[in-house]
Structures are given as structure tokens and as C-alpha cells.
Amino acid sequence: MDQKRLLLAFILSAVILFGWTYLFPPPANEPQNANTSQTATASPTPAPSQQPAQADAQPVLAAPATPDTVPQRIVTVTTPLYAIKFDSRGATVKSWVIKKNKEKGSEGKPLRSASSTKDNPKPLELISEEGLNRGLAPLRILTGRQDVDSAMTSRNFAVGGVEGGTTDAQLDVKPGEQKTVEFSLSEPGSNLEVLKRLTFDAEHYAVRLETKVLQGGQPVPGTKIAIGPSIGDQGVQHFNFYSIAPEGIVALNDGVQHLTADFDAKKEKVHIQRFDAPGHWAGVGDTYFAMALVLPQPASGLEYQAEKFEKQVNEQDRYLITSYVPVPTDGAPTYLFTGPKDHDQLQETSEFINKNLPGQQVDLGQLINYGWTQRITKPLAAPILWSINRLNKLTGSYGLAIILFTIIIYTLFFPLKWRSSKSMKKAQKLAPRMKELQEKIKGMKQNDPRLKDLQMEQLRLMKEGNPLGGCLPLLIQMPFLISLYVAITISIDFRQSSFLWIQDLSAGDPTKLLPILMAGSMLVLQLITPAPSADPLQRKMMAVIMPLMMLYILWSAPAGLLVYWLVGNLVGFGQQVIINRMLKSKDDQEQPPQEKDPAGSRPKKKFNDASLTQA
Image 1: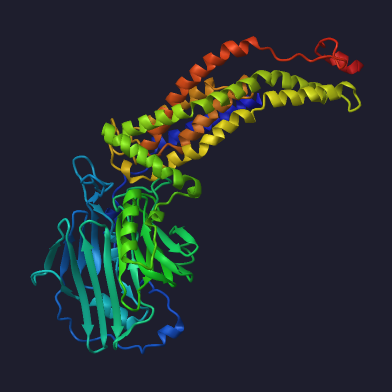
Image 2 (image 1 turned 120 degrees about the vertical axis):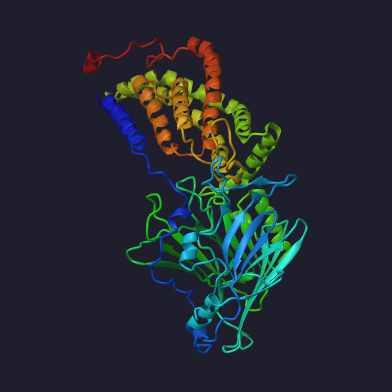
């Protein structure tokens, strides 16, 4: 009765969970940029911290009062890979659009915003409009000194390297070309000179960046440059376990850390996290895109600041997270990567940067968040993705590639499944006898001469029908299956790839048909798979509970992951039917061993309550 009530409770809980989600779905999501019409009333973002000795090294001068004679200009730089808009006021970035994901041997895959539809494609914007409204633009330079920072953010920089003197300027970088844009600021009254020089390569996402901030001919100490805030696809409507919000990523001497922007808004308006350990590079990014600045030499003083949106977006708290990276005092070049977190592309970019920065050996592949299992999954995810990409070139569909890859993998693992099912079947067959022995032993006294023989028989049966023998083959393949799960979840290859009625394999199935089919196929597979327990009710309970639990977990999972899981269940079903037929004729002929008399002369009859009482 208790088991029936437990099963009923699980079923009712599942009905309530999914019924509520169906009857009261979240409100229609809108792109993040749609929320940016609100004006920011929060207190100004504090400048990056500095040591007191550095702050006292230079006298504090009043902000220059001379009128700004340099006109404000919008400079647009376009390459085959991206398009950038710079604002000469502060020499900051106001737009960075990624056009495509570069691929070897092809023109690359076009990219568009997550808020796009088939009839209304939108550019993939990485710059947060909310951040721009708050004055938090990428490539801002801050020193922690009010006079210097005010001049650099409020004055117009002179623009060099572009033709014409109009308000808007255009720089086209064609394939095979490299071109440079310079932003310079000179304030004779305060002896302040600022230079930003950016060199664009049409074949790479990495931009060469040289920055100098001088006062009286000397570098201003503690100068930092902003990376962010919240770089990522600004059209993402809802963040979840599979689509993470923009996070900080920093590479220190002791490894790479991924930093979330969550903090207690009641205690602090701006959350600040500093790193004293030398850092090689730092950046900000979401699941598929990132911006990171690589230093010529490791430097200490890296800092992250996070602040909360004043209003929720699609009933979610949103945060702006910005990295502040120290600027080399000697003006040495740095490299700014802004683009897709594609494994092959990040490897190519790392080689390009390492070649141009001999003092560094960076691995931008660490921008990809493999989760806490990365020591296992990262080495396996790369060959898995390579295989799926090759199958995609053969079939022309990532959906078909996932299906073929799943069939191949489950076929390779068939011997392990056979051994596991064989062990489980034997354990299930011996379970009644094991239970009978347990009942007998439970009612016997310690000095009973038959106890030792029964215990020996119990140990022999446990050895013959050990359920762990069926689990071990499954455990061997678990690292690979987990790696496949991670690879499908994080790979940009599946982003906006269509299959059948699914428009995006990296997003959830809007019809929810895939998760339902996945759970249904899992239920059938559980029912026909041998289990150590011989209790039919217990087996049915587990067969129902597991699919319901996975249905809840994978309800909003990427469609590509659900395709893999569904096909795996279907292939597993076919394999299990074959295994069950192969085991049936053989196992049905075998009988459980009979209990022998302690003297070994004849089989014993089963004990009953009367005989135990007489004993």
C-alpha cells in the first residue's frame, strides 16, 4: 500500500509540475535590447580600485575647461567577419556585430540574433544597450582619477586612418587586408595625452590594440581598460541551465575561473571582485560568444564589477558584468578577441596571438565553459564534435549527423550493454532465492548449525548474481556519454541549425514534442530492461519515476540534445529486444540452485513457521 501511495505521489507531482507550466507559461519573451529604453538612475559605477600610493603619485588637476573643438564622429569598421561602430567621444565601442562563424575550407556559417525569426532576421549584436545607457561602454579607459577619467569620457578623440572629415566615417577591411584606426586625445592644459590604436585583420577575430595614457610624458599608473559589460547575444530572451547569462572569465597562473554576476543587491549596488594573482587574459561572454583581452605579459590588478538591472527582464534578474584589465605602461600591444566560442576557431586564434605575442602561450579554448566535469569531458568533446561535423558535411544536416553518430556510438557500446543485461538478468533470476535465504537467516539463532551453510550459499549467490556486474559496463561508457551531452550543449555548430520542424537545435523544442517522445521511449526501455529486483511493483515504480524525472530536467533542453537522447532510446530499445531474445532460451533452461542439507546428502524442503518454531 505504501508503495502504491508513493507511486501515486510521484505521478501527481509530475502532473502538477507540467500542468502548471502548460497552463501558466512564462510571458512572451522579448529581446534584451527591448528593455533598454529605461533610463538608469543608479549611482555612477565606481572606477577600478588603485593602491593609495599610486593615487598620490600624481597631483589631482581640475578638469579642463577649454571647449571641445574636435567634432564627434561615428566610425564604422567592417570586415568579412564582423562590423564595429566606434564613438569618437571616449573612443569607445557602441556596436559590435558578428557576421559569421569562420570555418576552415568554407565561407563560414552566417550568424544572426537569437531573437530572429525566419522572416525577420536580426544582426547578432554583442554590446549591451543597457550598459551604454549607463555609460558603461567597452574599451573605456579608467585610471581612478576623476580629472583624467572625466576628460577621457567626455571629450572627442581625433580619428586617424579613415578618409574624409564627415561626421560618419567608414573603413572597409577586405579579405587579405590589414588596416589601422587611431583615436588620439591631447589636453595641453593638463599635459594629458591618450592614444588608442586598433589594427584589424580581415582573416581573424582578434584585433591588435595599443593603448597609451600619458601625463607630462609619463604613464599614468593604475590605468585599466574595460572589457564588457555583459558581452553576448543581446537577443537571448531567457537564460537557463543550458543558455548561461554573460559571465566573467579570467586566466590566472593557477588556472581559469568562470565568474557569475549574482550578488546580494540589498547589501551592495556594485559587486567588485579583485585578483592579486597575475593574469594572462580576462574577458566576458555567454554560452556562445565572448570578448577577451590578452596581455603581452601576466599582470596583477585584474578586476570585475557587476551591477544589477533596475527592472527584471522576462521575469529574470539581469546583471551587467565588466572586466577591467591593466594597460601595459610601456604601450606594448595587446590582442582583443571578440567572436564565437567555436573550438576550432579559438584554437586558430590562440595560435595567431601566440605568434604575435612571443611572451605568451594562451589557450582561448578555455573561454568555453565545460562545467565541473571539464577534466573528463574536455578531452573527449573535441573529437566528438569533429566527428559530428564530418557527418554533417556528408549529410548536410546537423540533425541527421547527430542521429548517425548516436547509432554508431550505441553500436560500439553494444557488447557492454550485452554484458550488463546478462548480469542483470542473472541477478533478477536469483533474487527470489536470495530473499528466501535472507528470511531464513533472519529467523535463526546464532548457534544454529545450519546458519553457516546458509550464509555460505548466500555469498555464493551474491557472487554469481552480483548486480554490480551489470552496472560496471555502464559506468565504463558514462564519461563518453557525459562528454557527448556537454558537446551538444555548448557547441555553436548546432546554433540556429534547423531539422524537421525544429528551427534551432541549440534551443528548446517549442512544441515540446521531443521531450515527451524522449520520456515515453525511456519508459518503454526501462520496462523491458532487466533489473536486479524481482519485485514487479518496485520495477514499475522505477521505470516510471526515472522518465518523469528526466522529463522535468530536460523539458527546456536544447533540441539537439533531445534528438540524441530520443534516438539513443530507440536504438537501445532495439538492442534490448535482441538481447532479451538471446537470453531467454538460455536462461529459462537454468534453474536456481537448491539448498542442500548441511550434511550434503539430500535437498532440503523449505522452512515454514512451524519448523522454525520447533527448532
